[in-house]
Amino acid sequence: MKIVYSNFLPVKGFRAINLFGVIFARKEEPGLDERILTHESVHTRQMVELLVVGFYLWYIMEWTFRWIRYKDGYTAYRNICFEREAYDNDTDPLYLKQRRRYAFMKYL
Image: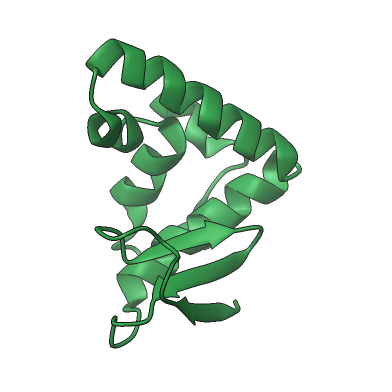
C-alpha cells in the first residue's frame, strides 16, 4: 500500500485519507499505526468491490443524506456504512482475511 505524506491531504483533523488505493497522510504525523493502515485497507477492499467510481458515488450520496439527517458533517461521516465497517474492524489486523464480500451492507 503506497503512503504519501502531504501538507494538504487529508484536511486538518484527520490523519489519513485513501484516494484510489493510495493513502495520503498529514506530513506532521510521525507515521501511521497498524490501526489506521487496517482502516484504510478496508476502504481499499470496498473500492475494489464497487469498482472505485461506485464507491465514491455511494460515499458522497450517503454522506449527503446523513448530513441532511444529522445536520452535522462529522456525524454524517461517522455514520456512512463504509466508515462504520472500517472503524468497527480496524483493531483486527486479520479482518480482511475473513471478511465477506460487500460486508459494508450490514452497516446500512
